[in-house]
Image (cartoon, rainbow, N blue to C red):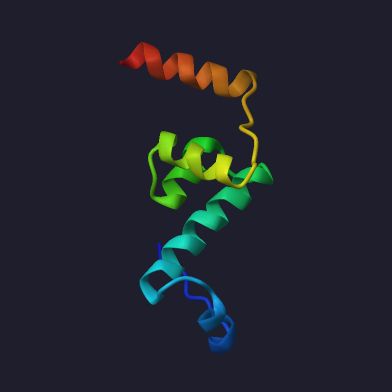
Length: 84
């Protein structure tokens, strides 16, 4: 799925990111924020960011966003490990 957003050109120009980097950074930033709010699971947010779980965990750490790991996540991990 693709989403189009309109931003102020002057504001975008002030970002320390090149044109190709802006979109990628926004994609990762949104995924991190949605994960932090509990709107997405870790796996969903990693997919939204286009990263593997390890790389997404690094992005969370850089933003001081703690991992949300409870019973549901543990059960998902166990089920995944059993399928391997």
